[in-house]
Image (tube, rainbow, N blue to C red):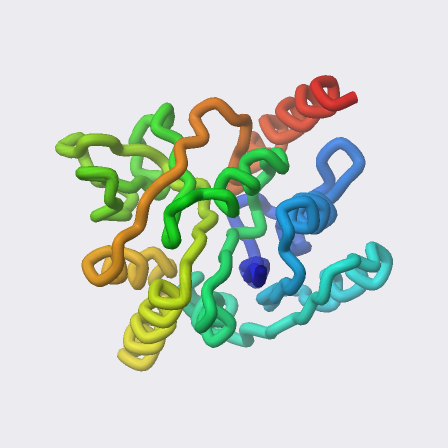
Length: 240
C-alpha cells in the first residue's frame, strides 16, 4: 500500500522554525512515529510532500533509515493552501492509497482502523469533538460522508471531526486527482485539500470509521504540544 504524508507547511501558528513533523514528543518526533505506525499498518511505499525547511526532513530520514521505500516530493508553493501539497503527489493515488496530515499524534491502532476498513474510500471521524470553527468537520447521512468544512452544523445522522487521514480506492484516487487538478488549474491555491474532497463526495461514496475511543491530536498551537505529550505518556504506560 502507498501513503502520502503532507509535511510541506510552515506551521506559523505554533511559532517554530522547523517542520511540525519534527516536533519531538516524549523522545520521538512525529515523523518517526508516523514511520513506525505506517510500517505496522502494511504501508510499503511512502511519499512525503515537503516544502518549508525540507532539508531538515531529509536529514532526519537519513538518520532514521526507514525500512519502507520513501520518496520526497517538493512543493515550492508551500505558503499556499494544502491543496497544492496534495496536488503535487496526486498521481500516486491512481491505484488508491492513503493521504495523511503530518502534524498528528496518534496510536498505531488508529491507522490500522483506517487501513482495515471495509470501505474502499474512508475517513476517520471523531464524533466526540465539538464544532468550534477551528476543526475540520464532516457531515454523514445514511453512512455516507456528504460534507466537509470548518462548520457543517448539526442536521446530520452523525457529525464529527476528521483526523486528517483518508483512504481511497482506484476510483476515489482518480477522482481526487482530477478534482485537485481542476482546483489548482483554476488558481484556487489558497484552499485546503478538503475543497476537492467536498466535491469528490458527490461522485464517489466515502464511508467512515469512528475513532472516538482512541487518543489523538492535531498539533496547530503550542498547547497542542502539551496535549500530545500527555497523550504520548499515557500511551507509553499502556504499552510499556
